[in-house]
Length: 123
Image 1 (cartoon, helix red, strand yellow):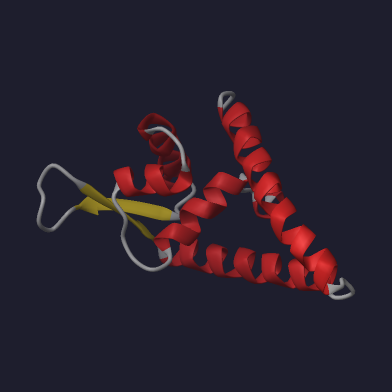
Image 2: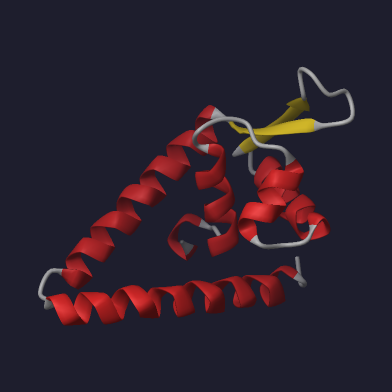
């Protein structure tokens, strides 16, 4: 995701917004981060013009986070790139290797999130 100027958690935030607006609380929960960390992620994405916030239509206390057209384009490009790379890397693997890879990717994702948390402290 660095190729697109994104931390992994920021990419995940964009993918979570792909289906439609999300609340900051839902975003924090789905990313596995604190509300304060989610706010920082949203602020960075908003500064780049990839997301916007707007009032929730039914709850005056809440806001919605949604992709901008620029953010939707970035999310689509990054997702296609991610899928292509995964297909390329896994093409020659046996069923047993694919199973091991699947288990290992969970560990990789946790490590990426931990790295994002430590990297975000300097932003």
